[in-house]
Amino acid sequence: MDNIIEDELMSSSVIKNLNALDFDYVPKELLHRGEPLRLLAQMFKPLLSNISQNSVIKGPVGTGKTVITKKFCSSLVNLARKQGKIVEYVHINCRKRSTDAMALLGILNHFDSRFPDRGFSVQEMLEVLRKQLMKRNAQLLVVLDEADALLKKNNSNIVYSLTRFSDESSKEKIPISLILISQKDVLSMLDSSSLSTFKRSNVVSLNKYSHDELFDIVRQRIDLAFHAGTVDEGCVHLIADIASEWGDARFAIELLWKAGITADHQHVQMVIPEHVRTAKAETYSIVTESKLKNLERHQLITLQAIAKRLYRDGTAYVNTGDAEKTYALTCEEYDEKPRTHTMFWNYLKDVESAGFINIKPSGKGQLGTTQFISLPDIPAEVVRSKVDELLR
Image (cartoon, rainbow, N blue to C red; front, top):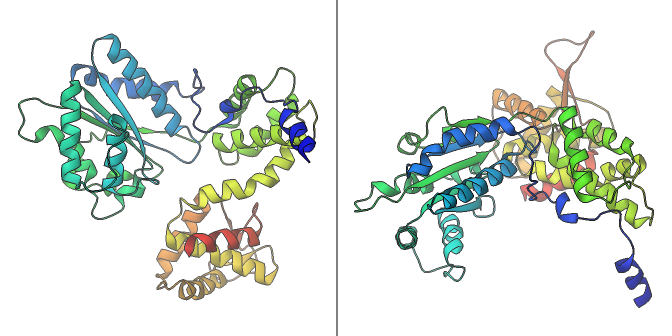
């Protein structure tokens, strides 16, 4: 038994640098994202003169929002240091820290890892933050990643508190700058006082990656992560083909990593297209779960209704009328009140935009405006199981 474990642990791998396949990895060169970086630099140039700035970065999953922000903020901190200025940069994931207190605790942990996680009010934590910045004579640059997870809560005041930080009566101004990252329109979630600190022009919108851009990204990650000559060129084309349907670089990197792991499990020295196909099949659950978490509750119920109907009927399509009837029944199952027909149609379009379903016209011989809905990629049973977990 020990020999089996040792053989596996000590076996050779086609991968030389696993970190380069991590979602949090920031390569030295960000391919096809030079213009967004230039825009951020233009927006935040006043920060080097101690003038706070606020910005929003938005775009679909896998378009580089987080990696661009990390690259920019690190470069800004380094440049400020060369000019004799101190800029403290803190990156907060709001899905993990989904209250004002938890987000502020994350900021304070940057300065003091032993800061207690309870016993301080939000106002007290803000005062501690003020003292930390004054002691260092520093500015603060805070990134609120997946900001909508925090801002959709009615009692969240963190953006107002941070953007108005220097308005408090104080002899010294302590500039705090914010970058909000989201797939959604977070500016619409802000109250008028917070919104007034954001310039409407300070929004960086990222589009999905094209096939050719994904090809370049996959090729770069192969060079960074794999031993030379261990990945068949056909894999690059195939991964770009698969991922371009969503324009999602995260999905492309996930497929590449999984294909490499599959080759290692088979103890072969070359990653081939068959490994990519295997990776796609195995990655459905990972990608599905990640994307499902971005849907709101009634969008999830709508998707659940479609999956249930397709699974029960054993058909390729369900018409919109039957889907709406099943949606109403599914709402009851999860103790929710069914929304109006118009809202249901909006949910359908949202779920389609997220890439889970396809909606097509019913075609000849069908009366009215009925359309047909399909789940083109993910098995209905997989959707049912994962959505049920999230809804419960």
